[in-house]
Length: 280
Image (cartoon, rainbow, N blue to C red):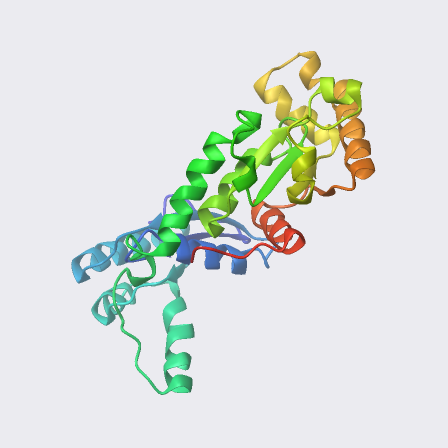
């Protein structure tokens, strides 16, 4: 008997893959966000690369369905037909992402795909992998204005008040696109001088600003330094207004990160700065 039933607008969503599961999760999330009234619990089952592991995964999916009293939703990127056959023994809505895209492409192109497990991540010797590692190291070395050395090599330099989303966006640009992103904080001293940090004007064409609603900024800062002036709503309002005024005056393109995902922010930056993706 199920020990807990899911509500009318609740489901468990699983991302099953013979690799890391990142592809299944990314595509699955994109689809699930279209159902705003649905609350779903998510689970990633990576490295399901043998029929035995697929059988174990199917048993787990079945167990979750029995517990919830509703069929789980499974986004799968399994390549091996034998693994797929085992997974389909589970009582679930199974959305085979590779079948959805690969088979129509085979018919259109008139050629068979390799059906090689893990091929999308077999990039250790590729140029794109090298770009990605270099970009990640660059982002870490140039996080939060740690160093002005090497900014000439940056593809983009993010500016904005502390905790406006610069660091996660820099790392996402590096990991997803192989883009070398530095980030520089705008601090009260900059606002008092009413000038950009001295290392930045020469790289003006690479600058992109992030802002944030003062109320949201106060919430984020309060988690880090509760009951401090740094986190006070009054100070957050002052810093955000000063930063936006400075960016407008300096002609820096910027956006508010308040309601945007990192994916949306990164895509906007790539488009505005006209950057090319260097990894796949």
